[in-house]
Every structure is written in C-alpha cells, then in structure tokens.
Amino acid sequence: MKTTQRLDKILAHMGYGSRSEIKRLVKMKAVVVNGKPVSDSGLQVNPYEDRIEVDGETVVYKEFIYLMMNKPDGVISATEDNRDRTVIDLLEEKFRHFDPFPVGRLDKDTEGLLLLTNDGKLSHNLLSPRKHVPKMYFAEVQGLVNERDRAVFEAGVTLDDGYVTMPAKLSILSLDEREAGGLSRIELTIMEGKFHQVKRMFEAVGKKVLYLKRMSMGALLLDEHLEPGQYRELTEDERQSLQAEPS
Image 1: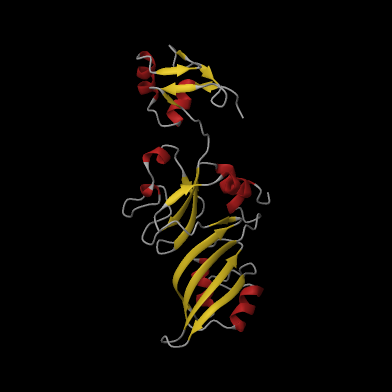
Image 2: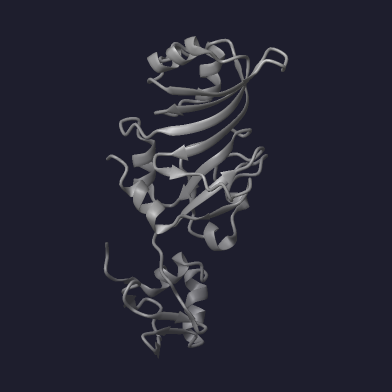
C-alpha cells in the first residue's frame, strides 16, 4: 500500500469534488492537514496517518468500500442500464462516488444477497471458478422435489446446453401437495454461477423455479433485517471473513 498520495486525489476519491473543485477549496483555506491550512492541492500526504479536514470535517479515508444489499425484484445487477433501474441507482451518492460494482449477478427477478465493492481483487477471488465459493439459495419450486432430484443435483446436472454442473447440495424444506402440481420450498448450495443456473437446474428435472433468493455467498450471510432494496456496509468481521476465503 502506498504510504503517501496527492491530497487532491485523496479528496476526490472521498467525494469532495473534482480536482479543480478541490483546488478552489484549498485556495479558500478550507483544507487543513495536521492543523495547518494547505496551499498546494498536490501536497503528498498519508491518508491513514495525517489528519485531513475539509470545512472543519475530518476526512476518514477508505480505499475500498464493501456493501451488503438485499437486492429487490425488478432491479438488475449492473452498474448502468438504459432501460432498467440498477443496484447502483439504489445507493446514496456518498457510496456511488467510490464506483462500486456488483460481485457477480443476480437475475432481475431474483432477490437476496448481493455484495457491492470497488475491490477488484476480492471480487476476482469470490467469482473465480477455481475458488469454488459456495452460494446458497432459497427457492419456491413448482413441482414436488424428491430424493431422485437430490441425487441428480449431488451428481451434477446436465443443463440444456450440455454443460454438467458441479455437485450441488439440495435440501428439501417443505412440500405442499395442495398447490396445483405441488409446491416445494428448498435450499440449494452451488459452487459456480452459470447463467440462470438454479432455474436451469430445476428445468433439467422437469420443475420450475417460481421464487429465488440468495441467502449466502461464502462466509457472508444476508442480514435478515435488511428489507429488499436496503443495504449497509459490511462489519469488520464480515469483511475479514471474505478476505479469508480460499485463494
């Protein structure tokens, strides 16, 4: 980690404006480092050790941000889109200026745990097929899921394009035979993230996913207090648990 950076780069990263706007703040004596107003916006400072203030407000520097979101139905997992609202559109400006991106994708109609960060290394570690990071989903499925389905999932499911999935753990939570065709509530843990994978796995055994929600990714569990569309920063313990995922 670099020990020093340009002051204007630090403040721009923290959302205090463009380089030119920060230069104006410096001219107005609104930027103070270690108790002294600065005259050079290009001053080299250590954001972790030097005390930086803007208009009397202490700057608490963060290189990376880590947000847990309970993604709602109808919102896409992307940084921008010309038609639909994205998960980035749900964020406050104080987080958007860090340029976070979703780690992996959830379908537009899928809810649940989504991690947003600007930490590219962590994202790569969580998404790389070689890492085998487990992802657990809750689903409501049309049809009665049975032991044969569980055995097929544990052996690997052949999808419609011929791809054979890695072994997956399928747990049957409840079966309701009163619904037309039957309704199953299940939990499914997969180790990869192919396009529409959970839905396609159930289609391969003649069933249809009606509702899908991701509950966990690696050691990170969805906060049950987050309503759809809500988000929060990860705790230090949660962040450390993700950093500790196999590399």
